[in-house]
Length: 181
Image (tube, rainbow, N blue to C red; front, side):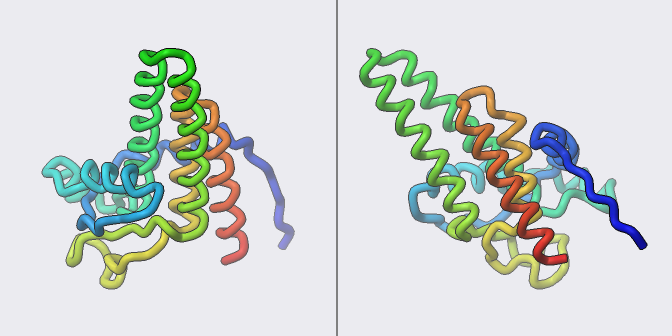
């Protein structure tokens, strides 16, 4: 059997993966810490139990795995934080605004490092509608890195570093997936 290799651009991969990002089940609040903790905490708040996602899951026998859904919420939360800080930067005098812009680049870079180095850990609620053992806290895996990267690439408009961060996370996730198989 011959294997054919093909390449997808980061934008194409992001568009493909984005179609999987609409299911949001809820995790416990694990009190994350570190430089990316505010983004993770806010994503966990948004990711909490809500009636609609659970009803949707009951109608669809194959919902998006909860860890991938969390990656979508995490990307959206980071993007919203970047948008908020950009708005503040625009309202301040030039020197202060430039300082915030520099901070945004650092924030995004640290976030990518935290995701890639296993600092950000996903906690799903015990006894959820997933196989036993899936609710154990685990670092973001390769599939979640691809999902997170795709979402950041698609939402890159507020800050150019988000697109680069998304491409980095997708590449890292794909590299780790290929090493598994």
